Length: 334
Image 1: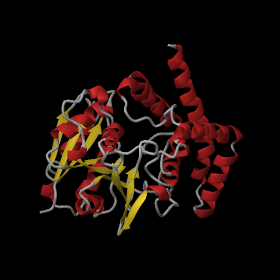
Image 2: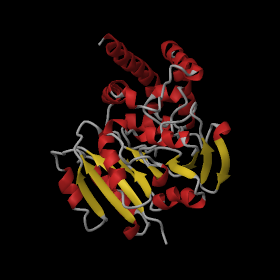
Image 3: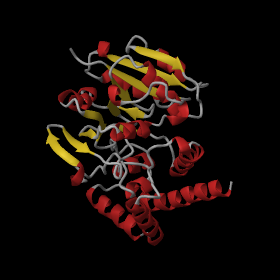
């Protein structure tokens, strides 16, 4: 029998994107009876719920009024707790699936290897019709250059055809790569198009403050479950942000989850006790201030794909350095 998959989608005032997100699920060639879609609403006041209800005849869909307007992770844990099936597909409302076989290809590694904890996409989908910032996110494999230079991103550049960290590769399989991680090199897994084997996740009786999408996979690592699959099928990430708005959102995210709720975090994107993290952060600062490395990477990418969005990279580096620096300084002053 085809395994069931519960899709969890936290939303809050997501009228701009939710129809495209759900259209991607309708598009799937996966048996409809084996997809259980949970919408976790934070109290939307726009047209989101009306739009979602128009899909009730197209999908096995449930709307849960989850609350936690200002904490997406608080809504996400309710999805894990209410999931009907043993595999959980984690989508955000701005993720779109363009391939009918996306779900089938993503779950394949978990069916073939029962030790694999999760599967995630190799890339974010690059489309020339996207906004400049969305194209930048797809081209560089993420929207946070700090994570990029810490080597903690879970997606690669659009121009990278294979997983570029060979020390993490366990085996190459048709359509995917099996990788293993350690505490020192664990990436920011668990969102924006991932499928997770629920039995490896500690989600019962966990305080809301202690739930974070990467923490729960890091917990699985500490329990000895270190295998994941990188699948060669992309997912669209339509952030809808300008680069400035994205900085503001990331600083707010950092302030909530990594400062205010820091005592509940098990996984750290930057660990001040890690020599490699400290060294890579120093490199990021030097690269940003001198601008040579970010600019050269932009130029190298532009030679392969002629898109000026590559050149947002030096700007993003500076803005993230200033934004995160401001957050750290103000937090220490308090």
